[in-house]
Amino acid sequence: MNFTKLQATGNDFILIDARNMERDWPKLARDMCHRHCGIGADGLLLVMPSNAANLRMQTFNPDGSEAEVCGNGLRCFAKYVIDRQINPGPNLTVETLAGIRTIEAIMSQGKVSRAKVNMGTPRFKAEDIPVLIDKPQKSRGEVDIISILDYSLVIAGRGLPLSFVSMGNPHAVSFLSQPVADFPLRVMGPQIENHPIFPERVNFEIARVLNRNKIGARVWERGVGETLSCGSGACAIAVIARLKGYIDNEVDIMLPGGNLTLNWDGVGEVYLSGQVEDIFTGEWLK
Image (cartoon, rainbow, N blue to C red):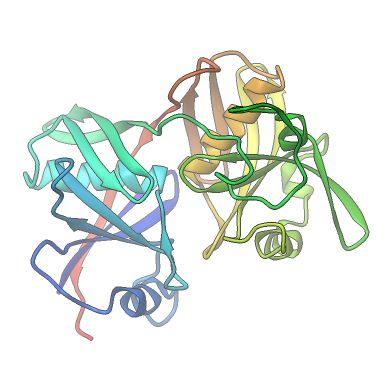
């Protein structure tokens, strides 16, 4: 079985054209994504046919769980299918478990060098995230998001301020005054990911506002662990920062693997853009 490995700001994925394949994908994801006994990756992405969009992307985490959507994965997906003429591009619609996402590819010397993804409209209802907290309703159909933006979760005796949002998958964001490099993410990340208030687990982001145009961040991804970058996580950070008045419509999220540019007007869709590249191709023998 042929595969290609791609990366987007250090978030690395294995891509397979699975339009005519049937496999035990959760098991294959666990095997292929293993850093020592496999190829090593933050996820397995499958190119599948779609009746609703140009193509469908299926996303499996290294633990075998299936993710609803993946922002950096969508950018890698776009490069993979456009460079190989599976879809001519430069514009592409992709079906995910979180809905259809639109991607605009930026070409350089006939290849995709950057990609901009419409990540959809953020959602704040507790049941949409989902998160199990007591949240008063203001009126029918309207949500009081104060508790969503300022919720203190006590972990190991430490109160951590969290803000919740769904970008098609669940996120909990915490803004800190300390450098993000000093935060014990590998200790706190698993405890927050698997906390009982998150029935479907959660992606956890820590962020520090550097100025109105830049935010430093690290991410603990559900089913993966700490990654060098996370597209939907960057979206969540930008959304919460915009709601709190820390930034304007555009911001660069500075992650260990590189920078992502986010645009959100505070009302509509969130746009994620950044570089993407092939790493290598190979043949899986197992």
